Picture (cartoon, rainbow, N blue to C red):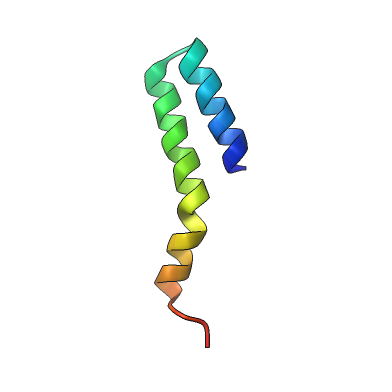
Length: 46
């Protein structure tokens, strides 16, 4: 999923609008890092 969004961000940034590409890239980074934040919020597993 994150790779698909990153590829879309590159294509949009290159061919259409840099601002829109940056926004999609930010979403791709958030999607990629979301599992890490989720683990930190729950704390260690018992």
